[in-house]
Every structure is written in C-alpha cells, then in structure tokens.
Length: 510
Ligand code: GLU
Image: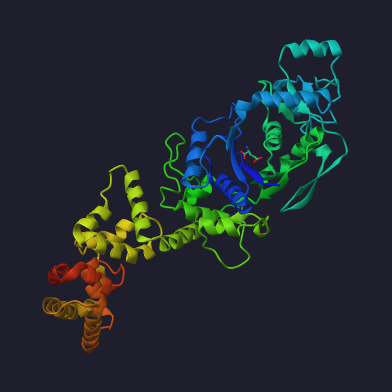
C-alpha cells in the first residue's frame, strides 16, 4: 500500500524547531517510501487559534523546500466540521460516546473537593456528581439536549488494558482506569483535537502517524476511537523530544534566549519573532540536515547530507527514542559544511537574497567587489572565502579588506607584541616595498621572496613568521583572512604597495 503521512500542526502560535523536525521526518519518510506528504491544519480550538500562524507554518515549510500548498495536499479541520458531525452520530448511536451537561464550574467544584476526580467509569454513573446520558432521566435528557449546551464524551471502560504499538517504542500498555472520558465534541459543536485527528487520519488514508513524543499520552484515546469505529489503526511513530543544550528538560524559548539562538525558523512581526534561524544565516538544507540528525543516524559516521541524500538514506531503523540535546554550535558547524559544498554562483544567490532581506539598509559588498575587481576575480575571491563561512553574515567580514583599505586600528596590538622588533618591522616593510616596485607578482616568486624575508627576520633576531604577519597586517589590517599569497595576487601590485606604505607610516609614527 502506498504510504501517506501528514504533518498536523495546530495554528496556536509560531511553528518552532520541534514542529519543524516533525515536518522534516514526515517529509523524508514520504520521500523514502515514495509516498505522499500532506499538511493538515488542526484549527478546531477557536480559543487558542493565533492569527497569522497558519501563514507562518506555510512560509516556514516553503523556506525549507519541503512543502508547497496545492489542492490535493492540504486540509484544514475547520472546513470539515460536517464530516465530524456525521461520525459522532455513529458513536452516540452505538454507545461509544455520550452527552454530558456539566459546566466548567460544576467540574471545577468537583475537582476542588476531590483532586483525584476523573470523569470516567469511576464517576460517570454517579447521579450525585455528574449530569450526563447515564445519570439523567430520559425526559430531562431530552430537554437539556434542546439547549445545545453539552459536550460529547468518549466512553471508556473500567479495568481494561489498552495496548498500542509504536514503531520506536514497541507495545505500550495503558490502563483504562487512568484515562478520562475525553470530550470529543465541544459545546460550540467543534470537535476536539482527539476526535478530529482520528477521523481525519482515517478518512484521509494516513498510513503512518509520525508526531512528537508529547502525544504518546493521547495514544490510548485515539486507539479507542479507532476501535469504536472498527477502523484499522495506522502505524505510529512518536519522535523523541528535542532537549535543552544541557540535555536536561525540553528545549524552550528560555534556553534559546540564554544560548543566544532562535528556536523559530523565520522572523515575523505578527508572531513577534525578531530573528529566526533564516535571519541568523542558516541555510535551509543545513537546518534540515541538523534537525534530521537530532534523534536519527544513518548507522555510519556520515553527518553531512544534502536533502537528496537524506531522501534516499533516511530510514526508521536509524531513529532513536531517547531525546537529543540541541547543540547550536553543531548547527553552525553543519551550516559551515554546507557552505563549503556550495558553488560560487549559489553563494552569490544566497548573499544577494540576504542583502535583499535587509531591504536596502545594507550596501552589497558583492556589487562592490564586482565594480573593483570584475566578475572573474570576484568569483575567485568567493571560491576562496566560502570555506570560511559559518553563516552568510560572514561574507562582509571576509571581503571587507578587499574593498576598503585597512585602518590599522588593531595593528598596535600586533606590533606591541613585537615591540623589540619595531625596527625590524620597518626593515621588512622597506624590503617588501622595494620588492613590490621591482618584481612581477607570481605565486612562485612571492613564495621565494617570503622565504628570503623569513631568513632576514631570523638573522635580525626575530621570529621567522614575523614577515608574514607584517605583510598580512599591512594588507588586511589584522591577522586574519585567506592565504596570504592569494591576497597579494588578488589585491595586485598597486594596492599592495599603497597598503605597505600606509602601515609603514603608521608604525613610524607609533
Ligand atoms: N495538532 C497536533 C500538534 O499540534 C498534532 C498531533 C498529531 O500529529 O497527531 O502537534
């Protein structure tokens, strides 16, 4: 049978990283099995509905490239109220569900007196306690039903063991005495999560339910609804939770704030999210890679996967049931590995999109590079710096010295370190300056020259690497950046000369 899975978020707030992971695993499972992946918005709880969250879910999945809404891959529960009504009638008629008229206030009072109170077989028929199909006289019941002020509850039995299989966790046994007769239809006529969820999973032909561990406790209720209808149950997979960075407790917004990262995919004014993982510079494919590894492994050491590779490799055997700690540093590392694999033109696209997002508040260093160096050299620069990106935000930092002459604000630190060598620094800069005036720059030539400089430095009692540091300091303004010889070749003779002279006068005056 063709597999069909669904991602079924409730639009009660912004989609967070746990939801994203569930969506990703559902997507990968569908791809791996050649099945279908659909989105179901579970919006029957009108009180908890947050305007804008459905849109946020759609945008986030689209950004990840795992879902785009079409006619045949999307449903919304609030559009299907009639379907649920039809099915609840069956449960009532056959005695699997019943009407209950207790107000919130009534129930509150009962619980105040008895904090262990459960609305189930232990109390359902107690006339002094509750008002429902079992405790009311026929006439009373008929009258009350006219008021439309009732809920419909699932009838659970006493002393039953309910055994449900989860593909990760094996058979899970629940005692029916621990369950409540959950509300299936609320006073407003809307179904609850439990009822709509099961009716939809069945009527949509969902073959495998993949969702977060927090839903394990709902499993016996769902199972009883399947049984009442005599419907076959789908396969169940409850994914492990994403834990805090320390591994203690579920990952929360507070952990994110403390760790300086976002647990949401996208920035959104409506959702009051200042920065999402996208704006932090994460690549969607890196986030997918990282999240799929939280609780899954390919049973080998491979950690970096493209989306295509994951689609082929993913399998439920590699899923673990223990929670996995969220490690932001690891996410950054995964992001870096994905940058390394990108082509120059892909990097340009990612950067252009990043600049566009800043809505013109930021000048594009890419445009500036092309103006100053032309397309070909720009591509060369990008091919060298991309290895060093952790996020796209690093682009500007890595190219700044190609665009602007350094100010040597930080140079004193470097020179002070070699204070006793100030005079040798001057000798070296002199030598470099002379070299730049007389020689044609080639990679081999520069290498030989740097070697000679190193010997000269040592003869003057300095460390052999001092010339490289001084040279780099002059060109970059700091001890960072790509390979020195590459920098020299890209900047070219004239630029190098100017910068050497600049540092020369800076040191002289220092
Ligand atoms: N609406 C539930 C949620 O928000 C879905 C649970 C399920 O997938 O069954 O997570």
